[in-house]
Length: 368
Image 1: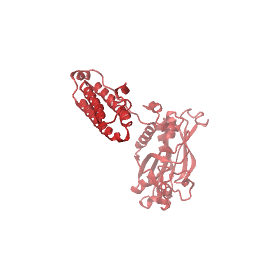
Image 2: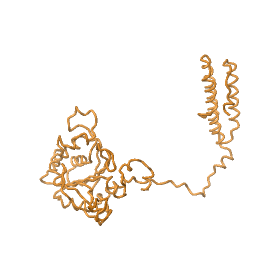
Image 3: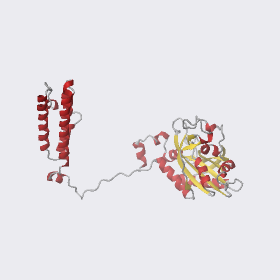
Image 4: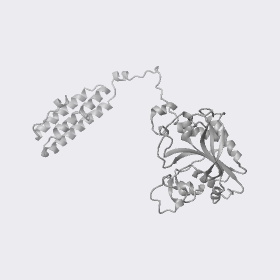
């Protein structure tokens, strides 16, 4: 239909062009004068300015692009004038006040119920982070935060990872490019754990310290059902006089019961971490079978969940460089760390860690 309204031009002299464009201008004015409401204005816009079937698009294709080289300038000038006319008519029609009929059609029935806006919900990782934070906040712990881009010193050296330690291997650690000219301790990397916040906190305040450190960490892990190069940790640090391993066991036993239920039991096995001595792995009785043995716990009745230990005196020695109060002969402390995704997967029965990051609303909608 539009093609019939915009015929091909057989002549491109000034008289022919004036006549052709004048006819379109007259038609635009007549169409604009007949507009009687918002729907008609929108139809006018689409008829004249529509990208695919608008009349001006047809004029451009049939007249401007088909014009011989010597006629393109006069055609283009007239096309510009016509387009400005149409846009001006559209602006005038859009700004004109609505008719009484239009006002009546748009009247609001105040007796109708309002539109209910759906409430959002916490992401399962955020929910688990907040739950862990609340548990330890009830025990007097504050929240510590720090940068995700860290120096080698805070991420490794101050945590008793000496140069050459396997954890510094670039196969595990994501390092920032072009750091070779810097001293090793000043080189930047993406933190592999939230432990650097422990040292930053101790440097900024004397003991006693009780902090919980939730945050994102990065490791060069291949993504699979249980691993991701980006994940979240919650670490804790408690430093004071006469802190013992019994305090550590009691704290974590209380936290696991608050998280998974009062029937959950905990047990500790010797382990090794560079920044704690002695160190332990913590297992909880299987929350799926109650400790009887199932596929989830590999028939053992126990699930390994986190690591912990007493803060190594070497770590206190690094803190004492800025805060002399961290004398390992006078104070002691414990630290622990756990993966948030692992806990969330257990609590909500999720088998694939990648579902947390896929942004699939069908998955996330379960947690509304």
